[in-house]
Length: 416
Picture 1: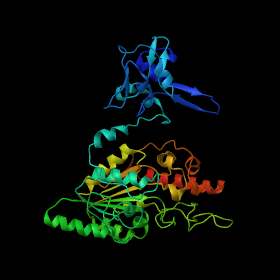
Picture 2: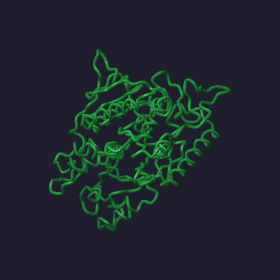
Picture 3: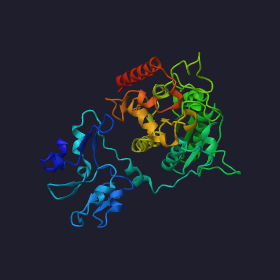
Picture 4: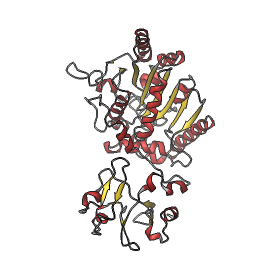
């Protein structure tokens, strides 16, 4: 708040564009600020068109000359982001300091972050949508992921989808038609990378620059498909290999896989009087692929779209020289047991607790770079409590997962 006062040249705390709010019905402390809503109620309620949403920046702008001080916007905003300034005698709100918010710079715990995911749609909104959903579950994250990946990689692509949820929604299709607008084939779980390698070599021979893309589940990546992926990475085959990690074999009944975490319920790691879910820790594929000296390795999630698209850009460019590997966290509504409305929030919480840290590795730079702040993570209970497959865990088991998460972060930091 102090930084806001200084940059705006005002002295009275009541005029600050960001305000603390505390001690409501529950113990709570958080800032009140304009959230620059996608469909802002303040704009639609303004009879004088004094409030408008800038289509380029996404910021809701206030025009003093148009404002008639009816204060309808202060009633319409559910977050208290627009308020009446008694000193100036008109409404006031955050304008994000022209894209360089002063409050963000002084917030040491990173409780405030400046996110620009909305800018992604300005950049890629005109790109062709190459995917039509077929048989996805309600709230399915895989559909969102496939749509964004194909939109960015583009039509000059050959797509491989080994057995799992992905071919069920893409390669197999319905009534003799696939649901992708790019050439797509359905390899075995064991040979996805090797088949793409052969196709790429053919296109190189005839002089055509075509992107090879794999969309594979964790079973077709970390388990059954690992031998061909490992060989392709070792040889430096030119492709983008995307692992859609839903931590199990969801398409065939929610069986455990190598990436299933400790303690998780699956149909093959049940929970009862004697069994407590999976007894071993998960396999961490991103580091394994990094040690293959791939051209590019990154972790990603669609909950952080700006980060996701930047990593797709890096992967596409790196695949011209060798293998680029993206490991994407993709929670499964039905297999993980959470409400469909929580698909994105579950991913955000996994990142905020360091359960799924976001980082990237470029072969030439020889070290990991974190792409999301990890210095002040939330306790892992915040993530585990959102997901049904972890609801049986006791304090000791939660502590084990917390220690595993902390140990992995220490290892990643040592490589950064």
